[in-house]
Length: 172
Image 1 (cartoon, rainbow, N blue to C red):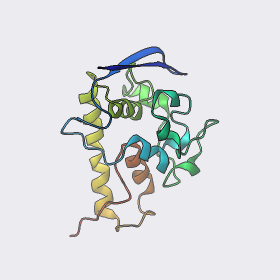
Image 2 (cartoon, rainbow, N blue to C red):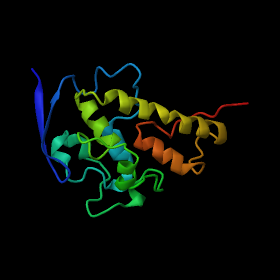
Image 3 (cartoon, one colour):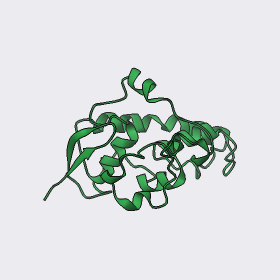
């Protein structure tokens, strides 16, 4: 039986969606994230500001050790201690935001992970796959374990569910 989630937070009111798949299962074969939403929140992403008003929508254990900052962005909460985010206004201007996920890709991913499937999945997975260019740059230019090398790209990769801590360099 499908479960329906009703959302009422600062960015969406009376939005509902159905969970069509079991949590964390049956992903598109082209979508293989390395981190779960819970892992990302625990590691530190988006300066802790993301999702501080919508915790009721997701499992409580996602937030048990999450690095959150309800009063505003706190870059010290990010895993790599750098700002790797653009403002929501930039995301909107570039056409990356859809009404169903007004917070952007990570909100889409959290809902997808929960089991929601929508017509926007293909677009979002394509955007996720485009981040591999950053993976390649880190592999080409950094030594394994040197987190001081390209920390902004590493933090950005964490925002997209890539584990930027474990990238092995490409040897020439």
